[in-house]
Length: 252
Image (cartoon, rainbow, N blue to C red; front, side):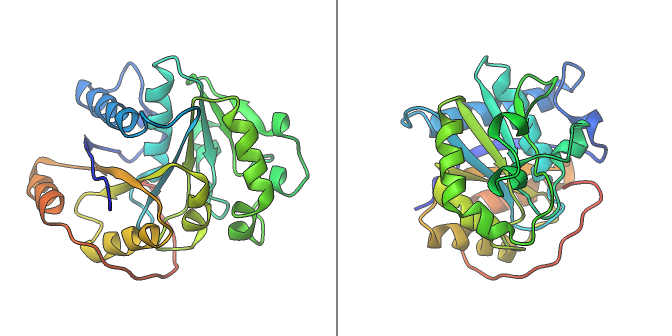
């Protein structure tokens, strides 16, 4: 069973830093992320201790990284201790988007080349970040390793919420491989871009691993695409497929 929550319409525009949630963001965007935050807090309210949440999309270019960053910003505004992990060990975007060090991160930690304290960076946005680090030859294996479980256990003692930005689930298996370590998934869907079949495929992947899908965040929405939003929300059914090929200029 999927627990589908309506997180509202969040536009993730084309530039990077300019569209990270801030005091200068529009009222509509601020309220959309507050609504998403409230829904996520409600969905995780029965979970004791640290809440671990995976953020992904069905396909590249749907806005998952920008959304992950903005969710971390929004949650940090509540005073909670927040960690954002760039678990996209193939095409990482988080550190580059925030101007942080890319050289050490999760891959270095899992490979035994850095300590936990060495890879945690504090951003000026009010939360901590672990970058992806070096690009390894075996991302899925690292993410599903026993070492990753140990890292998660330790991080869960330090933070209230951990968000993981992961590769698109229909592109590679990484997000599905790591899903056993999280409490649930948020699927980012770009309006007038994602297809029903793509979303079917993503949901079937997490259904197969018995991973709870907390809900969807529909972004890049326009007045013209509202009909698409409601058609998706009320008439959606689930199916599955898989593939690889991955590039995005703006919405990654």
